[in-house]
Image 1 (cartoon, one colour):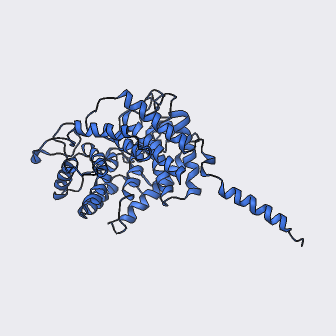
Image 2 (cartoon, helix red, strand yellow):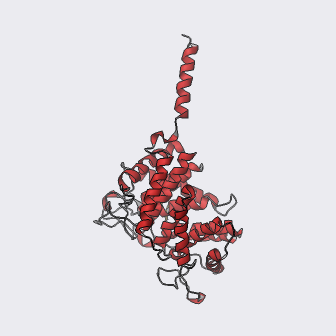
Image 3 (cartoon, rainbow, N blue to C red):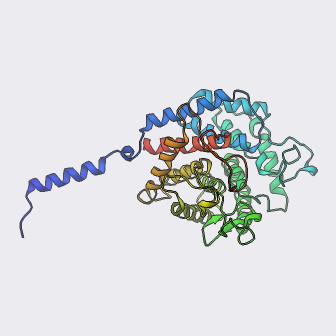
Length: 381
């Protein structure tokens, strides 16, 4: 057997060292400074196009969850101030009724639907703004505490009956736990989630139905398949990432949350389209074919968060992110900063619905900002 020369050993070592030390962003089309530029361009476009604060309902509030993440990586003071003005305009409230006997949690956009999660997602941003204050202003979190403490005092556990609510409210519970140290927030998080899981989770596919109306075989796609809505599962995947960030190791059912997070990562990986996006009906692309950004952005955020925080294998899931990030920045993102191909407000994949480069929406921009901010963190490691 021929001996390998010391020169050959040195050469092999240098080649291996070079490969291992190659910057992570070598396979990503932007470096972290370019990602920062994307965040500023997208958010600058949105805020200049929408200068006046809007109501505190879910679609606007979902944008602000992304805006606060963007502020976290850019420290662009105009971003923080934009959310602060919005919160002030809404008096740090969601739905504003003070008559607890009238508070409801079915779907509703009026002020008596205080217990409906679409009016509670705003509390995520209020808490984040409160935590940024050097001198704490309790007014910012008073309504969040009042509403959630009342909700926890009831005997009901079916508050999260639609999949979007898991993104809307689960992080409110963990943020309030982190703020107050009150473990009831963790106990009720577990109790409410278990109801949602029993109602909407498909153990075979490891995906979530949007709500009870869409459970197979009661509801099917046009070709008879199970119908999992892309943005719906994106809400859950991103919501789980957000709560795992703050859940203590001894939180009730923490392992279930981790398992669901990893299960979604696995299922969504297999359903990703070649160009990097997820179709509106995840397992049946023919139901509503074509690009879609909101679900794709939420998924990209969750994958990156999982990789950044050791929950997901970089080797296994970075290729998924590379494809989805390429879609988000090369197809969804327009030159002026508009984010396109966002399915409008709805709850399912609608055959024939037109979603094009001019289809934009606040919640989808928020999801894009979440993904971009987590990509910045990935490239900064």
